Length: 240
Length: 256
Image 1 (cartoon, one colour):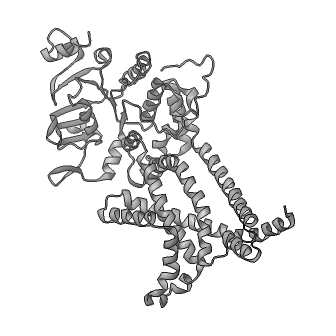
Image 2 (spheres, rainbow over the protein chains, first blue to last red):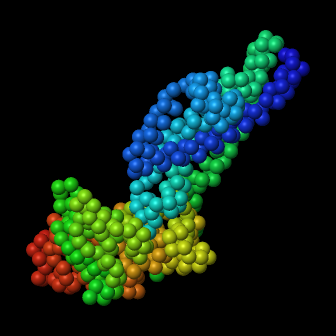
């Protein structure tokens, strides 16, 4: 084992970690906001919005993320009205294109995950909320969203971990994140195994931390599903 | 006069598709009335109760709560409430207790109880907590305030659900078969709470199969059959010798 080389590789790759983190954090947070909008359209009463959301989800779940990224990065520039628009200074940046593609794609998956969470909310709990005088935003904020989010959390944590790994695709549109830097190192050193193992280790550690955070959140939010605490001795019900 | 009644229902009709479940039901409840609604499965008694707080929208008829009529409009030939705001307010004035408790599973018992007062009535949280503690004491589950619904027995959950409704200080309490989902040994603890409420003068409509409650606690019994009120009267008359033949046959099935 060539430890000095591994150490040097690790240092080089870790220097690219902020870029990977930036891609990840920006795309997951933008994707989350977009997903909320899409799921709202998807389950709402407006038929046009519902069908738009269905189409959106189909397109972004049904086509490869890499092609979506290529279309945004290489494809959009073909159109004069984009090249001469105020958006062009942003859209010609590889980083912006990568974040855009990642966010648009994860929004489709996340919307479906949240829709599943909503469907799992017991109609009885919704009815109890209506019966007490809740409707509209209050019902969503106090009852629907908190319960749906708890149901969606395990699947959502998987999607978030997938997103960490998907940032690697940004290397193909010339963003110098961990995988891109690893490939550049390999082309200089031809030591594929060591370099990619170091890169894989970085992703593993990152995902380990994220999964721990989700597990902690899930434990916190699902105390109501824990096994029943032992009854207190001599606790007799007193009835008025 | 409508205002003399806590609840006034006139000629409610409700169909699901071509099947008419309620064929013109009327009812008045005065302050402190405890009305038991009996009937075989499918007689429309639960649907009737659900029409009162608009969980089902009746196709026809009027509903007045404490002198205020629920405003309806016609939309494609169907009745529809005119204002969701009024519906929400009316619902907050009517307590509803469900057969399967319907507590919010992600909240503790105390959180379940203060949810409505804090977020629907927008009252100060500290006051709501103090009142909730008193209600929990009253229904006998003060030690469960920080437990989650899944940790409670059915009887305890239903008592918590009653406390949740009471926390809204309702004008009328609606009970939709409150003991039907309970193991027989847990029925008594819920009925005792309901009996105590009745004795305090709460106006109650109770859809039930508990003949003893109907006979001993309520001051009026309504027997529904095939979407109409078959007979209606004081319990001593209804359960007495001049009961209607249909009701006599119905209670015969309970061995009452």
